[in-house]
Length: 120
Length: 111
Image 1: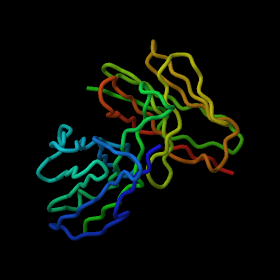
Image 2: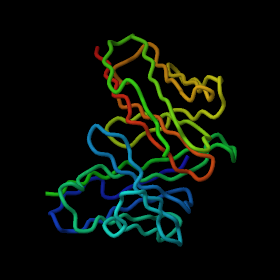
Image 3: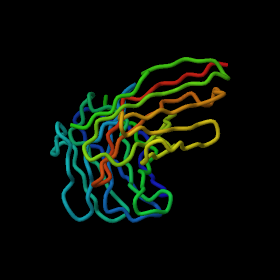
Image 4: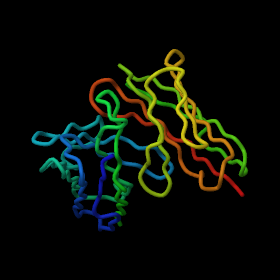
């Protein structure tokens, strides 16, 4: 399966600043990557689908001007949280869809290790 | 809107017990149901189920899908403290790769 890394693994920033999170697919070319957010004791909520070479697709209720996504290459997607506020503090996880079981009809998602953002 | 519901939300058992986690789904153009285990960090893949009635097994974990009743169960036998985690199920549509996750079941296995 695909190996996915995220950087940084954790970050603390002051309210009003911007934070960039990188998601890299280390051994797999990904035209699509997904960004999730997970608040404590809650499930993963899909924020947006990152598309290489085109604009990201945002889920309802996610502000595209606040959460900037850039899919610069087939191995890198970045999420920038602009003008961060304490309510943006969360666990941000990216994932890369890949192939499981060796068939074109079955595939899962490979998750990065996540980035814990704390906004003070 | 797609929806995945898990139950129970929280479960505490003793080592050696057997547990059954439930997942029901309403996913437009449903394709697969996936189970993940999440400990401290990101989820790790357990199973992907596409066909009804075919049990998938990995060690003490097994899972099965019922596409008629729109649910799946994850069984863990002879639980160990290392099984303590959040177990997430997710539904996948036919088109694209996006997943809709349930709320998760927080399993705690006490010694």
